[in-house]
View 1 (spheres, rainbow, N blue to C red):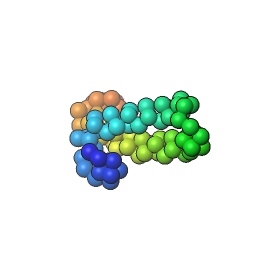
View 2: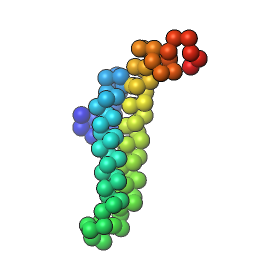
View 3: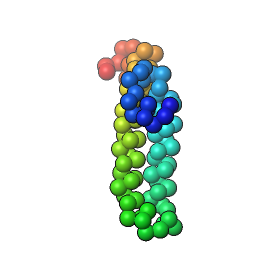
View 4: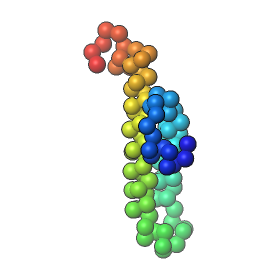
Length: 88
């Protein structure tokens, strides 16, 4: 999926959770590397925190779909909180 498709995702969260989790992982790594980078010059350094915040905001939005998909799968397969006999 492309970034524009991911952010407008309206499909089955159960189907997308796995793939989106990898995207979130990659975005978090990019944010961490950006914060650690001290060799890219003044222009990048000036906007680094704002850009990292933007990347983290996107990761958070994607994680909402991942969470929804994982929760739906757990409910369907009666795993996690959804185990038979347990209060949800």
